[in-house]
Length: 246
Length: 246
Image (cartoon, rainbow over all chains, first blue to last red; front, side, top):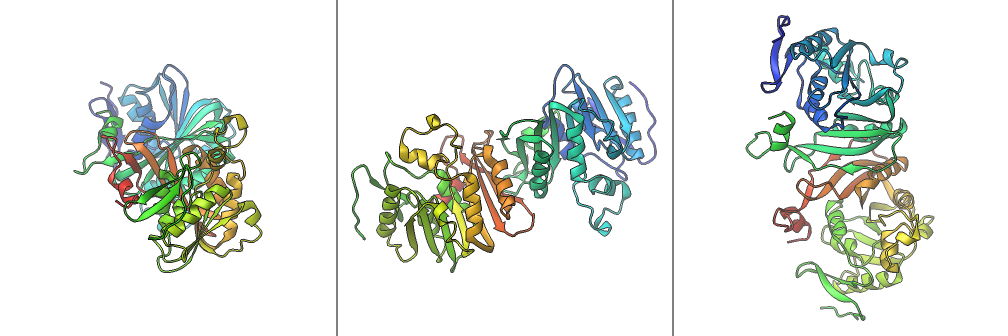
């Protein structure tokens, strides 16, 4: 077993029981169901390919994707503390050959990206950044959740630029931004192809959307079966447990 | 009980058991679940108001809406045979004071419509009309199902023109046209506000979408709980039976 340093406030959790560990810190950032479902939703090439996860946080999505593909995965994150945790999680899981974490602002990366990736994923900041007073009191959570350093337009535009033609971009977001997300995807020639809605319980409104687009693709949208998160006993449903690898 | 003429090939069916009848002809046109779900989905003012149903066919939607509102309902249909059946169904249900059926082409109507309606519904032709060879062999079904006499752009544009500011337009369509429908709605200032997906069975892809927009509204989309049509025994689920008034 690889050993890495764990700093104060951090802890080692399992994403996939007994198989995949992640270092996180409740006072800085912890991964959520959104990342797990996006990593399960997105198309991936199995044998090879180049995958990119923007706004990777503590690297949950690259870690999860490593179980679905032999391709190489790059995670990009703007916050230094999260990059540090993600890098150590990669080491802890002995995935350094497959996953690299870069400490960068995706906006700075825009000129470098050159239609090279097969797949791009992003679990972007969800909330528009109009009033700093509404931001999360914790700076790290605020940056991860609010469009402080990058807007939805930035995310979709840069995802499109980084993909080869025919490459896939997959996003997770909130239903109230569905229109904006779909419009931006079409604008940047990432034609939406697969759309899935996540409902917290049967009979409740959806609270999460998963969308995958194909660069330069033709209009042909499929609406996948709904994901229901909790059953009537407030336990995870089979499909969510499966996404968590149980 | 009102009596009306029933012509050869026609029959009187119930939409709502023991309560609401409809004259239809299997060789010309029969209403479908799409109309029933749209009439159940759309917002309606209860006490008064002006409602418009475009491409009304045999009038299923106006008939169903009459059970939810005291407002007046106009149904517009281009096919004479369907207009005749719709008018006689209105008479048969003694709803002439509330429902009027007009034999018109909505394209001709565009100049007359003047932001007067509170609600517009439309179950439009679903299929693009690129190749006449793909059309239904039956002319009546072909006109109802293919964009022969009106395109989706026409439908959304004219719906928008007919509505007062703040009025609601609701449409039912196929998932593969979701992007086009949402884009057109935004283009014509019918901001999508409520979106609902209809899945034939649990675990299957959606095969129908219901969308409601508000004229001049602000972006704020809600994703309603999914509708599942059939249960595991291939019987209608409770929610579909409820839409059918059972």
